[in-house]
Every structure is written in C-alpha cells, then in structure tokens.
Image 1 (cartoon, rainbow, N blue to C red):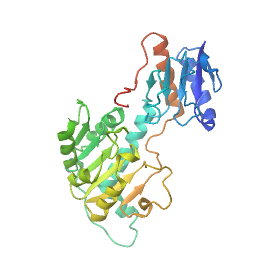
Image 2: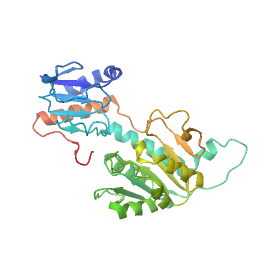
Image 3: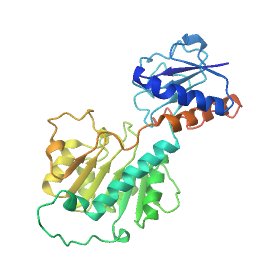
Image 4: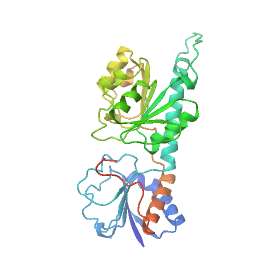
Length: 309
C-alpha cells in the first residue's frame, strides 16, 4: 500500500479525490489517498504551495513531492524540503497555454480589438500583415514555451525563442545568453513571456529591455507578474513605444481594483487563466510519475534546486 498525502486547500479535495483515485487504479497502483496521513507514514505528497504543509521535515519516508502547479517558486527555496520535487508538466497545462497564447497573439496580430470594441459606426479598412511578416519572440523555452512557439510557427509566424541555456527546437530560432536576449527583444513585434520566476528573471522586462523592442511592439505575459517592471511597462505604454500589453499574471493577485492596468486603454487584463492545472490530466501525470518511481525508473520533471526550476 502506497500512502499519498493530498496537501492543498480544502476546496481542491472534492475536485481531485476521484480523478486521482481513478488515475492510480489505471496505473496499477494500490494507493491510500488521504488529506490526513501521519507524516512519518507518507510515501508521496501531492502538493500545492499554498497548502498548510510548509514544514517537510516530519515526512521522513517521503520519496517525492509532486507539485500541482507549473510554478515552483513558492516552494523550491523551502529549507525543510529535502525530498525530490517534481514540477507539474502535463497535457492540460500545455494545451491550455497553447490556446491562450495562440488566441491572444492572433487577436493582437489581426487587430481584433479595434473591431470588437470599436462599434462606433466607423468602417475600418486597415489590413493586418500576414503572419510571415509579424515576428514573435518567446522568452522561456521550457515545455510551455517550446509548445507555444511551435504552435505559432505552424501558423506561419517567424518565431525566435530565448532561454538561459542553449536549446534546439524545431521551427524556432533558439537563442540564449545576454546577446541572444538582446536579439530576441529586437525581433519581438509580439513578445510572449514564459520564463519561470527566479531571482534572475525578476524584473527581466525592465525599461532597458522594453526600449530594445521595436516601436509599436506588443507584449503578452502569462508567466509570472514580477517578470515585468510594472512602472517601466506603464511608461512605455504611455509613450507609445509599446502599443499593447495583455497580462494574465501580476505581482499582487487578484489585481487590486485601483491598479492602473485596469483602466489603461492599451492593457488587457485576464485573471490568471492562461493555463491552470486541470484535475483529470494532472492526476494522470501524478499517477504515471509515482508508477515510474515505484518501478525503479525514478521521478521525472524534477526541479533543479540551483536554478530554481
């Protein structure tokens, strides 16, 4: 019998209990799933960083902590966490991000807002360029960034991707390092931020970075709010250097009602919905990962504590 602790907010238990049990059975695992296992009996923890579990020291048997979120910035630096930590990488997260990014890139590329919001009797005849003439830069080439970049490339967009370490991804011009970052900014008619939040990426898109983007560039952020310097972005929007920003994540969430982003005519706010963990697909990934570990293959999608993701 494998003891799995579900450590997340109480409201998530009804959402995950049956999908997890079904996924464990499908994977051939005999699991005792509970919210209340004694710590010294727990084999694995299915974990949300906003749960009550913040001290991992009592979980002396635990073979792995399986994060329910794609981001691990709220747990990776916990000094009591000595167990392996696995990121959530699953079809639902990836597909959800592809759909949000592709939808909003096409919305900005085609200038849809002028027609959707501008129902004022004006017959607008501006013709957008074809996708081949609109350059997209993806910042962050992990599982989500790579998938979104390839989806956009399949629609004909020239896609440049930047990451801290070298990558080789079909359909994407992959760059890395400081020089690569500059080139990716200069090629960003539309920039999509998909970097993890680390000390190195906090404030990555600051005044200097925004100034290197083409005049009239557009920006999407479904990554993490602190990746952007908000004051610098607002200034770039006011000057017209950046034409539009579509933001799904913020330094403070929910975004305060008096925040300037809400009222800014060149900003679209979405409420952190670009890609959320879906219980059915996440449960399948968790079960497969535990089955791998039980079969001696080890957990996958493990977090590198040094890099923070």
